Length: 505
Image (cartoon, rainbow, N blue to C red; front, side):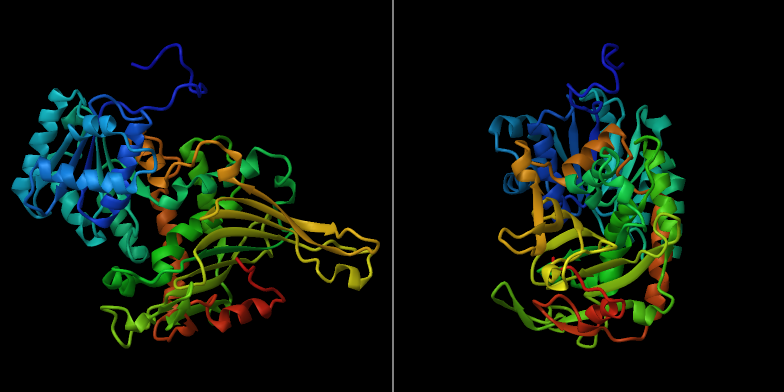
């Protein structure tokens, strides 16, 4: 029973879930060790986990609870955002359990089901459990069928709520996404399915909504009358690391463009929702995704690239084809750029340039709103040589914040105007550091708040954008670019044909 003296608008007390269990499949993998376990510790350290909260790890390893606790301790201490406190860890680690087994092992899943039943009584979790799929997409059907067979996915049998958390990539094209959605929705009810896009958990991404809808300053000019173009960039300075098998089968467009960047585009382009109810927010994002138009000629309106050997941050970097376990004749793209449009009244005629790349000069994700130049400039041309477009730049990472660029007179006797920047940084404006994306998202799963989670229709519509690009690119070779460059020359030429240039991130 909730507190009768507290309203939904009361922000004095934090949101804390009901007593529950978090079951992590693939608990020994990179995602679990680097993100999930540290996030659980940070939530516990902030006092945001309920009494009796339990973590159950499931993986193909012959361990006991003690070995799992040792792995979790090392992972949490290395990845924790908040200060380390032994007393917090001691209380948390007492509620760690480990189930060894493979995904086709019926006995292991029966053991998991009986363990959850025991914890229901012993820890008072009332049958509440969230199942986190930190596993390869190919294993999703196996685990879903096991959860269905054992009845662990059925709230009526457990006596509490049961939720499933699915990591990207959600399918590899439209048809596979539809099939996976049907399978997940057959095992769990749609309201209990949480499809994670960790970018939506970032404070700077959520701030797009605050920036637009909590202020009267920006929304009046957030349209085709004032906006010249929008650029969305996600650049990474690293290569593919240990993800060779996955990355070579997917490429930059399927790996990042289909999910992270199209979600950012939807937040920038959406209309104001009537409320921040999850259904209202997702409905407005879905309208944008359905209104996306591809270039009339995909060959000239998009660019694929693949990095060659070069230098990044003063260090020698090998080319993509020299990366371990990459075929010497691979035509997988490590860079993708495309010109998209949004066919509605607000954005008609405004190009959205979206690009993603690896082995770029530096790591940066940003959204740049490029405004049209003033319709009349009563200055001599020499006075405004250094004046560019007004820009509103939302920096998602790593220097989280917002930059507003506009023209100002240079001090002196002559009328010389050039660009200056007003720079807001999260780290300087707020005393509390921003929580990690997974902290917010794991907490939202346990609470049952689906606002930041794309639904099945959004996933499928995103694939409808990507599939035609993949079809047009089939059989073509990506354009080369050296590691440490901002992508292939053809990418610059794509914008130059329309009189524009990429913003130097």
